[in-house]
Length: 306
Image (cartoon, rainbow, N blue to C red; front, side):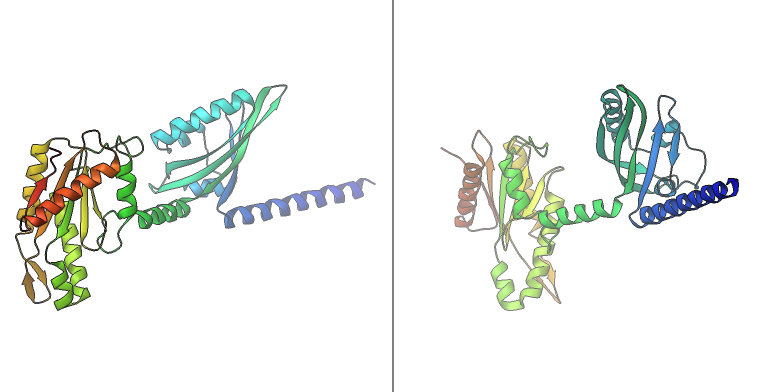
């Protein structure tokens, strides 16, 4: 009878060992680690996946103070607040945190946490930690592509629209003070005589020059074929005139296209925000641009409602 009990116990130990092995393999495949923290002493228990996520030697000593220092300051603040609330309510939370691993590598991890409690008193907090760095990078890449003109690397029409519609900077933190619309003066001739390859080169170089001329924090966008825009928070008309003159002067220099140099001038229309909505601000800048083109191109005009 005693021998049968020993066999049964050994079989249970083997089954548990096999279950743990399968769990570790599945966790490694999904880049997930299991963790728990006893309360109130804060003693941590990690599976191999969590050690690997933090790039710490497996089974090495761990404590909350040391690992918390590996979180970015903002992630540490948010995680501590969520953790405290979950412990107080015997609740749970999900959170994406930034860390710097023991080897100095930046990573993103997704934390899920649940609190075990007895009669409303928290005894343990546990959950999973998953490496989502690649997922975050992919999402950032997709966001970049959705908001970027592929040819020039400038903001595209979609991002430009989002900025100009957010006049007070409630979403992106940068209020709109002025809009400059820019048209290339001789671009059609480049496309017609030299072909689209050189035309693309011309657009790329245009983007580079506009970036150099734009004030810090401004959004430089390609909003059409040879149409560009600059949104800035400045509401100083004198500064806008200075920027416009800088752009005109920059395009006074020829552009190298293949073995030849070509002069590609620009015309600019400026509108200062004085209480207009986004559509009106755009129309004002467009009217100023039309005036600049009518004046012979290669110049700028500031919209004047009077």
